[in-house]
Length: 330
Image (cartoon, rainbow, N blue to C red; front, top):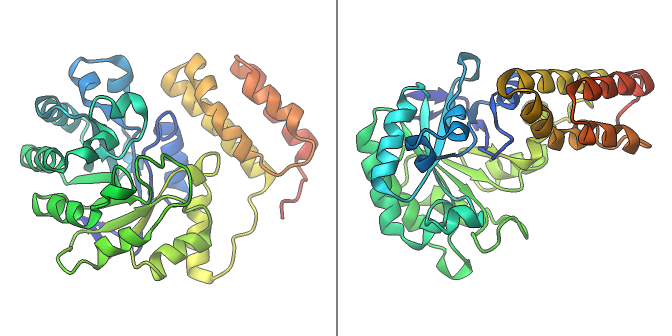
């Protein structure tokens, strides 16, 4: 059993990574249904929260069916981060996660996200003060380091643990790599194998097949996997991994009818939560993977990703069901 604070999770839990414009309530609900053990919100700006910015405060919406759920915040200013903690607590999450890993320039340029990897002392101080501010477990998501020459993740993880961090998720790339090249899980294993470490250490980056999840567990000895891009348009990935772990066999391919049904539900939930315009716009990125590998599918996909009205997208789903309903995935 793995524990984050007092939260009990199964052996080798699977966590949905926080992803901007992806891990919103509709998608989190689908992933939870398919076996995600912990889900995280999109990352939320502490400065946006304390200024009551609509885009930031909307991301605080969480629902009972998602639990355990973590709200992730980012920032580099201590006062803002502490005020953000107070605001986040009102949403009653199970976990508060600090983003020390986002590589995007507009975040890094403010010293937040992966930008803070240049100042480990500030990283440690922010974590320590946030732990003191709340009774909720505080966790951290970060990267190996700023660049190849500044990988000190074993020391960093130990320092964060010592000031009260309840778990750490580590992406196996540096900020300099962004998302290029292969994730290196070796340094994450070094963190886990440090005899002074006693909090859960989760791996992140390139967990894109059930076999890779098994490798992270058995070869690298990590406590769980945080999964991001492999789940986009594929909430079944959690179920596929768990089935493989239990049986050693791949789950039967997801049927076309189930794919269309999930896409319909996803779009409807998105519209219900964020309105017609954003609901239609922000589900587009999922359709390629919902219907991946189907021959002669491009005209249907084009309709889905270019239509500005949900009625047209739902009509495209109906067409797909009529034309490809019996399609057999292999």
